[in-house]
Image 1 (tube, rainbow, N blue to C red):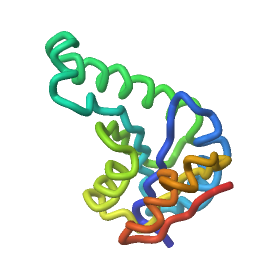
Image 2: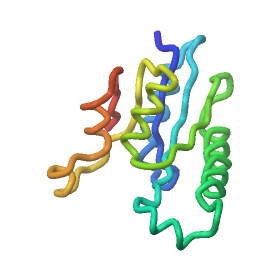
Image 3: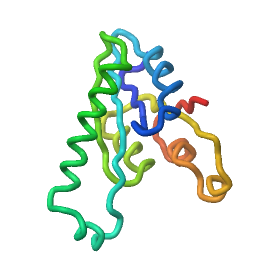
Image 4: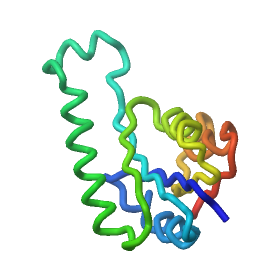
Length: 140
């Protein structure tokens, strides 16, 4: 049914994938590729980057990619083709950009317990749902 499923995970938060990962893998058919994305926050203002060593962002991205590969090999069943993606920047923007780049026909991500600030600003899941050009499955 789907050919490209994008699964967004936070490697530091088990709740971000504990239910979403099994849902995504259950939706994978014989011709489905699973694209697992995690996002490393950017520095924000350029002045902040001056306080970090040169190539720091590349080194962090490389370490996170290794962690993502370990995560996938441990948690994704064999036989499902997986692409590992490490994004940088704003979480919801990176998810939407990645979905466009891989021509995702489904984005799977977990919801979290909303806090008061989420009602005012909107959590990443809500922003992805509002702005995605493809179907989004939010797993509670």
